[in-house]
Length: 368
Image (cartoon, rainbow, N blue to C red; front, top):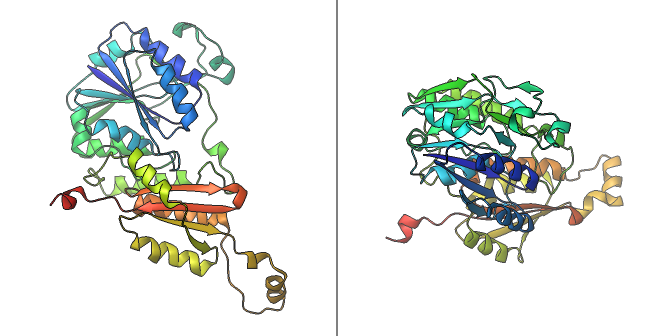
């Protein structure tokens, strides 16, 4: 038996339809799909759920993480942690599968070996067509440097507590997994005898990066940070990285608890002193009771008095831009608070950043 895990957020429904239809036409049916909707907008999630109902081999999971940055690792881990089938495959809604993919994958299963597959990439024009697998014209094929589509022995993943949940947005999490598995004695093999998957075209993450703060959460240069984290994992021969509570995304109950707290925010100006104190002191004092922080540009910064004092060389506060604060705060959350219950959003109309956060309840301590 093979479990295919789809991590997903806000992608076009046509991609899902093509991908799952190709699975519906497999030569063997000894597989299931765990579809993890990690924070799609509510109206999109309802459409996705309706679409998936047409495929009886799919189980749908939704987490209200739309006010958190994308975390593919935690989405995958939410399934891997309790998975009972012997092998799992990290899938992608961009994939169109050959009708013999599952059959071939199962034939390659070995108890302590992971296998990743060569992929044929389609152009934008070819992606818009609807053909039999063999009739698509492949623009180019992937090399062993592309590690994202891998079949794993489930137990090997569970032994090292899944994918490293430090990795947010995009970049390096799949290679990191290969490295840590190999460090733990698992072999990793690249299957390139034939192309069994086609990749539907889409814009790259880097092409969407902006220099402005945006409600579509971003951190400038995050791909480079992720690759540096991978280098560290390689140099330190990492295996287990996540804490014991790995694979636990924000629940609906926790989300609702956080939402109730947004009506009474703690206001913080964008002065450098206030922001640095917030990052390095106030955040560390967060308890299990949710607290909402709201960061807004200080009105004094645009006043005539500020400009006059600046021209005259008099002492005035130093400020961070909201983009600088956004990037520092998200990196801070990723590094130190990713296992807390939190929501974060950019309110563009009000030129405001809003973080609502609570320390997760220690269930062991709570039941003592």
